[in-house]
Each structure stands twice: as structure tokens, then as C-alpha cells.
Length: 350
Ligand code: RAM
Image 1: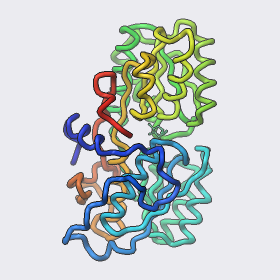
Image 2 (image 1 turned 180 degrees about the vertical axis):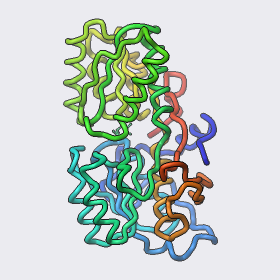
Image 3 (image 1 turned 90 degrees about the vertical axis):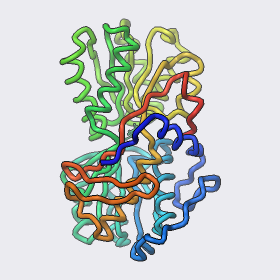
């Protein structure tokens, strides 16, 4: 199984990334993006003409703009075309019409970060019945996909979230979670794993609440304010969502809580840079979303071409990332989360 091996490797990859903020909601190669590598001589001709739909939880989220950039780069390398579509909000069934349209269009594969693990399955199964390969990435729909490209194990993500919260709380006291949507498969798995870790290893830390900002900036901002009012002794807000962590940090940065209540979780360096620099945020984490999208496109292509079926032990090559092996539960792991802080944030641009 291929993992992102070192922080240096992550930094090297991230340094070449271009800010995702200008990525349009289409798959036209982005001006200013790194030049795609020429297809290698071993690229099977069958990849040419392959059509993929990319369906993130919602549009307008820098995290998915960056993962789409990676997916587009991979598509350019293998001669596939992609179309980015998606809802503006991350509601449970908001992706259904986009799956149905892709099914009518008879695309070869759909890459989806699922907003709900059950609400989408009827539409996904209809797409599969029409011969379309379904690859979930970022957020899974375990009952109805061919393959899941997971950024890291839930336990690994929870471990880094808990470690940062415990450190920033000084080893004891109240923490709260500001999550994405209540139905999000990925955040829910991470929160459950956090609870297990906290109960087993950190009895002096009390998780007082889990609230939901729905991956909407304003709702996340308002939920942050409500948490501070409800829990005057709160020490840390853990937001395992790039939208939530940025909104929480923005609220805290101009409030009396700055320097008393710490915001941590999963964020993009570009969203969080100013809050690290102004002292609102000590440390947060993420993986490389561009690599996640890149890997997903190569995995989808391997499925469509019949090189893999998604079974455990299947191997495929993902361009510059090298060879990956499908693990248990038809899942491929990208690598470990990486921590960003004042020491290193200047090195990253995504
Ligand atoms: C948000 C989304 C996404 C999650 C990241 C960390 O962008 O909820 O699914 O993986 O945060």
C-alpha cells in the first residue's frame, strides 16, 4: 500500500500547488495550474475518451476546488475528460439529480464525496446498473460504490485531532466539536473515533458538545458564537471541516475569546494562514486534497479499463504518486494527515 511517506514529500508536493481559489466550476484545464505531464508510452489507448463526472459535497468549497485540480491533472495525463458538477449546499439528497444526469449521459465513472451514505444509494445503484463505475472519495457511501479513496484511516485522523485538542487544552478541560453536516459519513466516523480515543486515553478532557455548521460559512460562524455563550469554560473547538474551522477562527479572531479558546481541526493552509499569523490558531491538520483527487481519477480509470475490480489486493499505478494496493473494504488509503503551524505554514499554498 502506498502512503505519503514523509513531511518532506508532502511539502514538496504542496509547494507546487497553485491557490485553488480561482478554480472555476468546470473542468477546463485551469490557467496557471502546473503543466500536465505528457502521457507515458505505456498509457493504454483505451483510456482516451474516458468520461468522468466529479461530484463533490458542495461547490465553492476550497477543499474540493483543490481536489478537483488534482483530478483534472490526472485526467489530462491519461487523456480523460471530466465534468465538475454539484450542489451549493451539502444536504443529504442534494447530489441525487447530478448522479441521475451523469447516468443519462452514460459517463464512464462518477467520483463522488457523498453527503449521505444511504440517501444516494438508489441513484448510485441505478448508475451502476447502467455500467458506470462509482468511486467515492473523501466521504464514503459504503453500501453502494465500487471503490472508496480514503484520505487516511478514521482512527489516524481522530488521533491527530485529539492530540492537537489535548495539547491546546493543556491536558484537561472542556472541548467541543464543530462539525460539517449531521449526516456526513466522514466527519461522523472521525468523531466516533475521537470519542473512543478520548474515553480510553484522556479522561481529563471533557467533550461537552458536537454541533453542526453544515459546511456553510455563516452557520458555522453562528454555531461558534453559540458554543462560546453556552460553555464559558470551553478551551478548544475542534472543527474537522475546512469550512467550519475557518469560520470558527474568523469568529474567535475578533472576540474576547482570542488567546483563551483555541480553534483546531482540519483546514487548508490558505484559509487558515491569517489566523495562524494573528495568533488565533496554534495548529491544525489536513492531507493533500490535490493528491486525493489525482489518486481518485487514476483509480476510476483503472476500474473502467478493467485493470482492477476494486477487490482487496488489486494493484494500480497512480501516475506520479506511484503504485497503490486496494485494502480491506474496497478502500484505498492516501496517507497520514499533516500538521500545519507557524513554523511551516508559509511553505504551503493550497
Ligand atoms: C470539508 C468537507 C470535507 C472534509 C474536509 C476536511 O471541506 O466536509 O468532506 O474532508 O472539510
